[in-house]
Length: 282
Image (cartoon, rainbow, N blue to C red):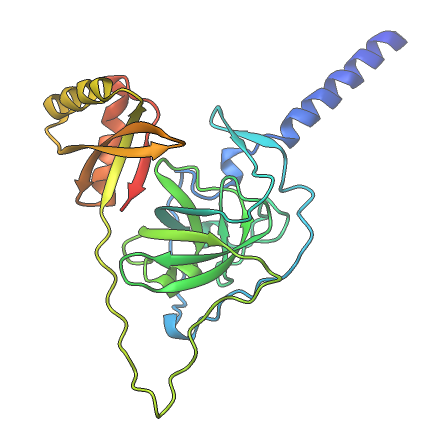
């Protein structure tokens, strides 16, 4: 017969396991985790008829905002605020495989809705996403966690990816800007018959780099640069910036021709002792 103390110990163990599980996201339940093939639906959308998400002042998701969570042994931390958040990087998208599944915020994923997944923004957060290659923009509601694929910063719904023009390629170079639901989105006024319509210039082609280190010593930056140039045969640049009055030398590989090249290089860098990298879009 199990004694009362043994029962108490067993119950405490079960509680601890539950708490750990609540802060850990399983790979089988998240977008952006490489497993079975995802795909676009048979029903295609007209990108010019897709309406943006409308930012609303909503309470935070109770289940979607743990202080941290673990995926594939890596711990991610949820931002306390999305105010002023701006970042550039590579976007991906998810479709039929996850349609109808529960997102990290508790809402069902709808690939026809204007939503997205992000690793650290509070849920929900509304963001404006700009395709840096064609200038198209979309407003989406971030209500899920992901993408947990190296070198990706946001997973867009099929509808959002269609509006931005990245469904065909699978990825796109984007800029993300958080929005305040209490403030109107700034849009240019419509043209009037008296004012000539000025065609917007096509955005300059963005360039992709992989940042592999940042040093306060130029000598250290030069040493890493020379090592990589010899080992990889790729162009290396050292970018000097000023951080709070101190010079920082950032070592970056590139410009690189494609997202595929970024991914391939990233797989080779650990053998050179480089484990922490960052994709830079200029």
